[in-house]
Image (cartoon, rainbow, N blue to C red; front, side, top):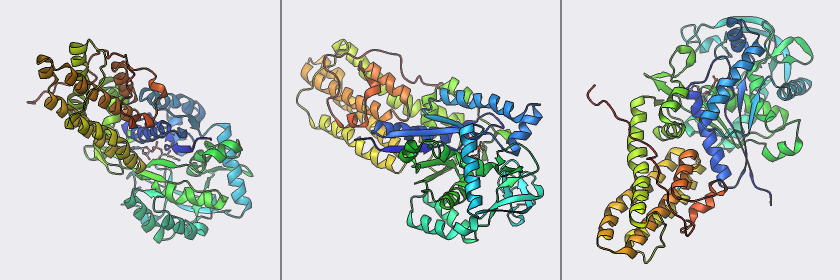
Length: 513
Ligand code: ME8
């Protein structure tokens, strides 16, 4: 039987600049879901990429004295190298300047034109180059862009329009019938109230600059960058290129996006698909923003946290863990190094690291590392075992809601319980009193619990999970699956643990600054 397919995407990022930690956030969320789904047996397609057309990228290129294509070719590198550094397991990286994408965009534009859903008109109104968005006068704030507060440009040019208004009732019905389509709920309400004021036809072509995909039947026009960019999701699924792949992966299961681009994804994109007669994605998941001093982290505002530096300082798993554990999905979070250090010293060094380190050290001391069999269980052993085994259900439930934070909270509950178990079972006293059989049971119970915890950590902290697996002296980490978290007694007999440096050294804080 063929495995069930799961298709997840990130926003495709503008190449006008290098990435910051906020971009890392949406990509990490998608990566964790992709890894989790693979772990649970799905055939996953995970797509990310770069958005390379439009006035903003053209402007950035001109400022550097490069052609937009040269500029884009250079700027892809910092994105791809950050994803490698963050251990992002994407299956495909799409660039909107690729031939495969250009062809799909042009075909769609032409099909909608032939259908009468794209028509020629005149656009007169405001445009924000930074947001690559048209704004009606009523939406401006103090005459500036409502999103980024920059100055807007007045445009007056011939333009093709997309008949968005025609499909608003159909989209409303879809959103009402599929409460999960836009998540979290409060974002769905935002979309619904935006739609109440009526969806206007949108301008989908420009004539006053060059950098874009030409309208196939009217070379004076280039296609609006958002119309082009949104199509990446379906290009990536094989649409109009590979029928079998497309059938397998489309509709996408989750589009992970930031809250700033929700209207494009929850209104414009589904309407494009409705017009094409293509099934809508199952879910649009909007994340919140990371802020610094209360302001959205944004390269162009000079409010940045360099993810490369952070990874060099703290390690990629720590950053992955921090971003996912610190804030609930959809909410904003303030990024501070102090908060990162608190998580390292608390959850990672004190709780998880210590559990593994203490257990391995005791194993070396009492059994020269050789993993023992367990004897009769006492109630405290059974209690820890049940807690560890019940993690699978709790994690499944949380991940089903894409509540990665809750999954981590549940995992750490077991970590805490295991640390408490060490204190209660007091292996050192058992060793001192020569209660070898009891000591064997306690150590085996701890090791099995750590095995289960390590497996559950795989999607969020793949490197750490592999390190723990190594310290447990086990092999075949790559072939494990979520099912293995449901068994007790999974440690191979006759194996020995291996001593290693602490997983997360504590970071000294200068307290009295
Ligand atoms: O909007 N906190 O690209 P973009 C959290 N090309 N997430 C943040 C963030 C922050 N401070 N800053 C950015 C575009 N992001 C379009 C998308 S998709 C068809 C086209 C994340 O480079 C967030 O997910 O401006 C946001 O939606 C995305 O980066 C936009 O990146």
